Length: 357
Image 1 (cartoon, rainbow, N blue to C red):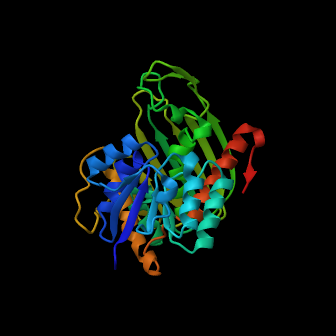
Image 2 (tube, helix red, strand yellow; image 1 turned 90 degrees about the horizontal axis):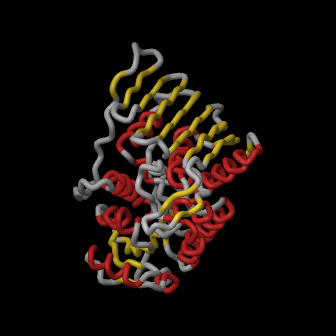
Image 3 (cartoon, rainbow, N blue to C red; image 1 turned 90 degrees about the vertical axis):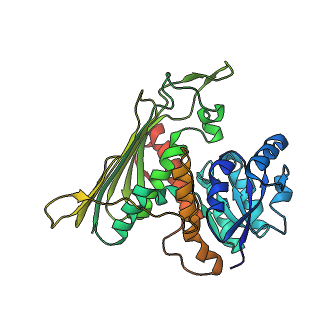
């Protein structure tokens, strides 16, 4: 197959994760980079060994020598850039969350379906070592009728003792907060395992309302640092998703999954699973899958994300030949579904109680 020529818009996350992931998969060719900051894109181009750089994204997405546009810019720009790329006849990979709200996410979805191009959203955590193993275990029929899923995450990113993050992270209108940044992955994973959600109830909190930035300025925080979501699923299962990033010295994730035929537990270190008819839970191996190219994704903190995204891209390749993929790839319809859940969670937290989808 002729390599799919890729142009990345955004050289923050785009350079950290998207670029090495595309380079780790035979079938994609990373051709060019774009950023609205000329100096920044020039520096990243030199670092990545890519001479073809641009600061005009509107011209960039229309280039005839690019087949796929990877949108790795701040979420406030996703709708305009992704729609423009799709209307220019490009395939699109959109960073998550897909958009600021469900209306914008739907506009991107509709543009993709109208264009007939291949498109996906970056819920690459489905391909992390533990989640890929869980996903395959469920796909193999071990769960039976689903009863309950709980995913809990904790960290100290917004505790006052932790160094400040970028200012936009504290601004809800700019896509900040951890409902968007962290729990969007968990919403997607819950739906990948258990199907469609039908209703949402939530509590969202901003525990630390002011932060001093690295430059000394103090800003008001209106994005969430703590969230608990309850989802009712069409399958009859219940889902609890909770996260908080204001725990000093806290770091961890837990997953519990119960069904008529089996139980699975991930405690952050070990994956345990067992059939209801068996004697109990026993260790289940994490996914050992690596990119088929043999590419070394390195040992940096971002390595696990690069590996996961590379595996997603690898599984996505048949779609460009008009063929079925071995695993469902997160579609722009999936991204819209997550956005609907996020909108409903915010409505619920504002006092609406259970919100039907």
